[in-house]
Amino acid sequence: MTGKLYVIGVGPGDPELLTLKAVRILKDISCICVPKGREEGSSLALSIVEKAVNINAKEIIEAHFPMRKTKVVEHGCELDAKWQETIETVYSRLNKGTDTAFITIGDPTIYSTFFYLYDKLLELNPELDIEIIPGVSSINTAAARANLSLSLADEKIAILPATYTDNIKETLKRFDTVVLMKVHRVFDKVLKILDGMNLTDNAVYISRAGMDDEKIFKNIRDIKESDLNYFSVVIIKK
Image 1: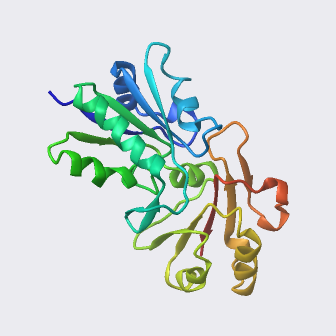
Image 2: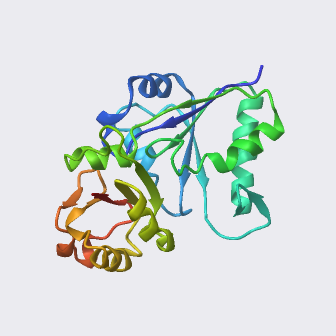
Image 3: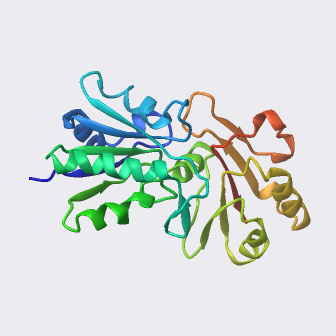
């Protein structure tokens, strides 16, 4: 009998934001697949889980997910051969009947590494049982930590990776609330756009929301280079 794959959102960093369902499954499961951006790096997702669940007796599969060009193309993105290794490793556990969890920061349905693997796993076995367990996203956490309402009544929300700066100005014109994800590399450009549209005072910057070293700036002009972080969000509410 083929094992079941649970795709579990572990929230933005605070282990108390793990859902009861996520904790229950992670306690029961014997094998956890852990995404890592670098082979020599650590897994933030696993560091969250191990504060809530004893993982000592569990098999931990470290999945290295480098984002660079290779021959395997999925969802418009060229995937490294390491991704294929992870697909084969996870599937081998499932094929042996081992229920497995794939953990991911925040919520699995929002900019998650897992969906690069989803279709490939189903190609191997279209009957594969995959259950997605939602988690608290960095978007919700950032808004909550900054005491912001993302929307009221008929207000419209847009969520953009900040790297797509060509779309930001038009999006700001059309939507009441705009959330820019991972602004660290383009912050100066975002600030210039907001200044040009007289929206700088409407923006709040939150980095590492829900983590111990969280930072919140309600005046984003005060942000220094040392305050910029990969896990960052700017929320603009008109």
